[in-house]
Image 1 (cartoon, rainbow, N blue to C red):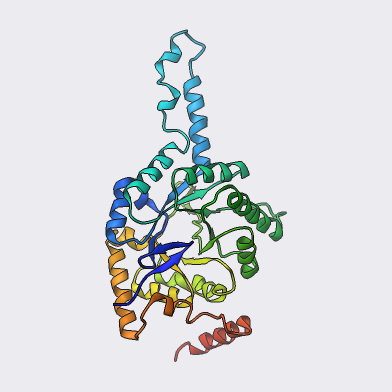
Image 2: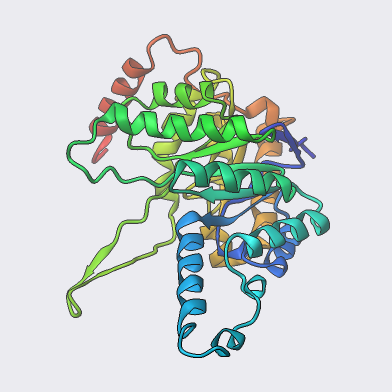
Length: 331
C-alpha cells in the first residue's frame, strides 16, 4: 500500500482528502459522520459576520419592543445571555468538535469589517481551531473601484488576521484576479500559510414568474477542475505556502490530477452531499489503487510532478497547449 500521508498548513494528514466547508459540518453529528467517513481534516461551515450582526440587531429590536409600555414588559423576555446570538453557537460547536474529533478541525470565517475579521478569528483560535480558512467574498460592484484597490483590500484582511492569531491561516481565493500569480505571492507575503483554489462564487438567477432575484445552488462537476488545475500547476514551488484544491472533486481521478498539479490537500463537499460522507473512503481507496497501478510509492512522489515548476516560460507553455486543444477538435 502506498504512503498517502501529506502535510497541509503544517498539519499532518493521514491522506490528502479533506471535507471542505459545507452543510455537512453544521452539527456535531455531521462532523462525526465526516470523520467516520474518512475525512483527513474537516473545514467547518463558514461563520458569516453579517449573520451575527443581523442576529444582534434583531435581538436588540426584540428585547426593546414594548419596553416603555409597562413596568413588567421587560420581564417577558429571558436574560439576554439565553439567546444564541453572535458567534456563540459556532464557537461551541468548534470546541466540541475539537474535543471529540481525531482529525484537525479548521474554522471558516467570512467577514465584512476589519474589526470583525480580527475579532472572530481570535475567538476561533481561543475555541481551539487547528487553523482558520478565510472565505473572502467581495464583489467590487462600484465601477470606480480599481483592481489594485480590490487586491489591497484582500491583502489588508489577511495581514490583519495573521497578525492577530498564532495558528495557520489559509485564504480561499477566487480566480478573478488579473495577475493571479502576483496576487498569490502578495497573500503569502501578508502571512497566509496556505491558499485554497478556488472559491466558487455563487451567482443569483432571475425568476421569470415572480420577477425576483433567486439564489441558486448547483453542485460542482468534474469539468470545473480545469482552472484550479492550471493555477495549482503554475503556483506549485513558486509560493512559500501550502496549496489546497477544491471544486469538482467527485472521483479519485480529480484527486490524483490535483496532486499531480501540486496540491498538498484536496477538498470536496458536492460529492459528499451527493453520495454521503462515506464517499471519502471511495476517493481514498481509488487514489491508492491508481498509485499502485502507476508505481507511485507515496503522495510526496506524485505531488507537483506535472506542475510547471521547471518550465522557463509557463505562459508560452500554456499558449502552446491552447493551440493544441483547438486543433484537436474533431480528431
